[in-house]
Structure formats: C-alpha cells, structure tokens
Image (tube, rainbow, N blue to C red):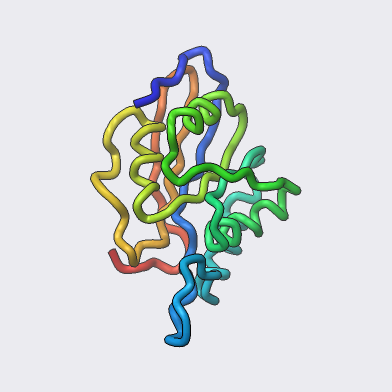
Length: 160
C-alpha cells in the first residue's frame, strides 16, 4: 500500500474501466480488441463529462481498448496518453502522488479495484469489476492530504 504525503499537491483522479470492447466475430480471437460502437459512444460521453475538468495527464494500459477509451478526452486536452503497467505497481502510484491537477486513468475489470483502493489507502471496491461493468467512474480527490471518493454511473448503464 502506498501512502501519499500530506504535502503532495491537490489532485483529482478519474478512474474508469475501458469502454465496451468489440466481441469476437467467430473467425479469429483477438487478445487486443477494438471498442464496439457502444464502447466508442461511452468514450465520447467520458470526454464530454471531463471537458470542464482541466485534465493534465492521461494514463492508459498498452491496449487498443484502453487507448481508444481515452482518445476523445486526450483530443480535447491535446494530451498524449502515458502508458502504465496494468499491475499499478508502486512506481506508478508514486508517479500519481506527484500529480497536480486532474488525471484520467483507464484500467481493466481486474485492475480498477486495486488502483482505486491503493489511491484511497483503504478497501473501497471489494474485488474485480464484473466483466459486464463498463459504466463506473470513480472520482478520487486528494486535498491537504485527505482523500474522498465519488462513484458515478456514466453513459448507458450496464448490468452488474
């Protein structure tokens, strides 16, 4: 568990799972699928939500679905997303602790819980997200060494 210094600058972290991925068409199995049409719409909705948030950094895993989820927001803010390891190791968490401003972090169903819990310093999400869950937006605010979290549904709700 990484603990953030109370002297660290204020920051907001927007943590999401990548949007819906294209399903297998039966001809070949891709380990790195693109976004489906609903996924592309969700990525656009995320960019509309974050348009007023002055995002200064974007972090994605090295997958098409993660990069594509972040792409509309990156376009608004003219940012090049930075690739991080999906394991969200201590070096990545230390990097996040130095951020001033707002950051979008795009993860996966089995990494969002670890990321949110490590940022909060406590267990907020009890386990991996469902494979069908794409609509959660976790907003973690760090101010004067204190952390708060807000969980929102964005875009078309998905079943849990």
